[in-house]
Amino acid sequence: MPNEAVPKGAVFTLKLEPDLRRAFIATARANDRTASQVVRDLMREYIDRHQRVGEYAAFLSAKVERARAQAAAGRCAAAADVEARFASKRCLKARYEA
Image 1 (cartoon, helix red, strand yellow):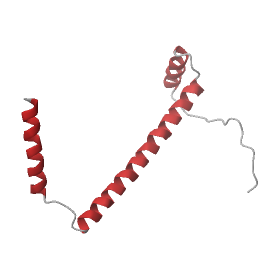
Image 2 (cartoon, helix red, strand yellow):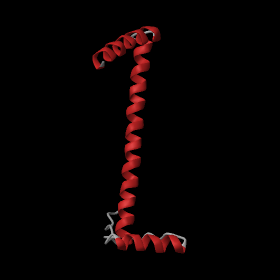
Image 3 (cartoon, one colour):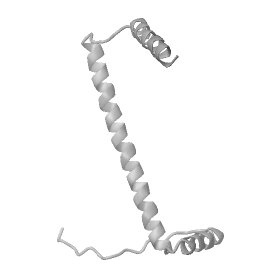
Image 4 (tube, one colour):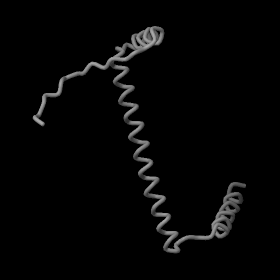
């Protein structure tokens, strides 16, 4: 595919209810912004938020896989042992805070 020049801007057409459009444009103007500026900001925020969700999902998946590998290798503690350890820590914390 030959290198094609990327246009400076593209037109994005939306179908909106008239009341929503009027309120949106009025709110943008009240904040000294154009509707296009606000829509671009909203699009960037949307993309950023969903990229972070994807990054977190990958982080969590890797963490779960590490835990599964540790469990399969026998490097884990029984629930009762973990509870006893943290009960002791909670007791020490309560004494410190009192």
